[in-house]
Amino acid sequence: MTGRCLCGGVRFELTEPPTEAGYCHCTRCQRRTGTASSAQARIDGATFRLLAGADLVAGWRHPDGGFEKCFCRFCGAHLFSRNEDGSQMSIRLSAFDGDPGVRPMWRAFTNYAAAWEPIPDDGLPRFPEAKARDGMGGAGFEPA
Image 1 (cartoon, rainbow, N blue to C red):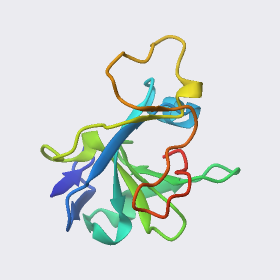
Image 2 (cartoon, helix red, strand yellow; image 1 turned 30 degrees about the vertical axis):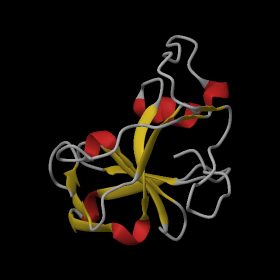
Image 3 (tube, rainbow, N blue to C red; image 1 turned 90 degrees about the vertical axis):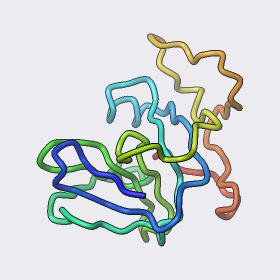
């Protein structure tokens, strides 16, 4: 499974397909993407490998903590976020070359949903704050 940024300078692969995806409605994701939420697949960081463009990947971490937000310095495409040791990551669904094989299954940080775009009545479970990391330690998942 492969993916890339908008200009193609950064390319990555996963050795295992993602098993979970969801929408994050936190204000950080809203400001980062310019949209009401960020659609992302959670992955085990050990399955991620950069194939090209490591020198183009820039990251930013909020002073209050949370996952580092990584993007292409050339085209600005949002690619992934990761915790400090890279063991937990979220890949933006739009960064995959093809069908990532998972569909969003939940909505997190709904307490911060954008007033200008109501959350659709799609039947997905909603979490007012963080969603627990199913199979990833059970603790809260940071805004990605």
